[in-house]
Image 1 (cartoon, rainbow, N blue to C red):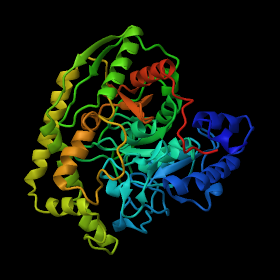
Image 2: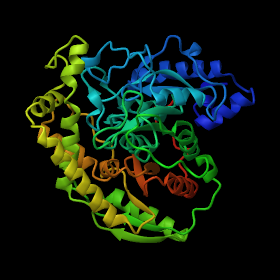
Image 3: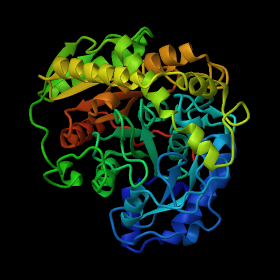
Image 4: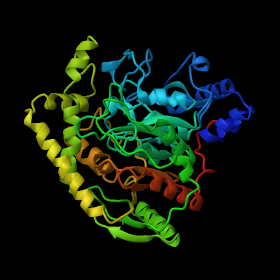
Length: 474
């Protein structure tokens, strides 16, 4: 198999070749390494391609048997492998346990061959850190790939691997999907376990999944990675059938709420608004009932939730830094994260109650506003990928981060991390500048099946499979 052939397949397609013995799993790893060596110096997506990648364990069974897979360097852990969270604070840290996510990925046949870049501690929707430098967008090297699943987005978009891990607390899977022309799904709260050491806690807004290029890979990954474990804070009903079976089932006639206005202070790009309207027309022609919706929540309430969850998440940094033999200061944290950490130390215990109340109110407001709709259709991002010099966690202020980055740029996506609803960014369109435009589909809580079917319908109606960025393996 040649490199250009390898990079043309999705993960399901490569696994089928392995099953038919037209290619070996070892050959796929060698091709992934070749793609990495060719592409990564340009985009800086992979911070470590394992020297022993050809011999790392994985199952020969499962829907992804033998497929190379990259791990985002935060959220999911591999025992004995570096886990640095994009931060100098964790530099050199090696956990002693595999996360359940990693165990399930291996059981599904994915071979983990390396680590991808992430923004420091998963904060920020851009792609630059003091530890890893700038991760560049294969569609335009001067633009961000988004974050915090930065390297995974760039690696999949450029063909290094067909699928890579991602995690999403305020949009960190869906932002790179929108900016890189990928499928980025965020499952319902509780669908994917964060255990054994990172079970959802508090308001539980962060979930792990993957970035990929096709809806069938998304559905197969849901089957592989879904499941709960003892100690999980949120439990969710098991699906009626495997998600890959939903790909052959009809969608029925749905009532769809469409967002065509801005949901925060940052205005929606008119070109993106037009593409959402175009998608709504396509869905209407399929027989669905489409109705425009107003913003279903208060942007100020949402800011309190996202800001509060960030502050509360920094409460354990002193303990973790001490265990690593380090101090939390300007030598270990970037300026924005250091500011958030220092402010978080001064909040009283009662602050957590305030954050939980804002989260409850946001969930109630959104639930009431959208209860009559089977799915929602929104932009993923209000604009296309930003230039690298727009801002970063090294130079943005705390207030700018909360107002612009966490709320303004993430106005359509972070809210559904809070509500726990399943949502996916689909690469349906490209801008007049040649940059990807993501369109988001949001389902009812625990109803991934409907999202999978609608995503399949749109993939067939507005196909994207033949689109390739200028920087692409082979």
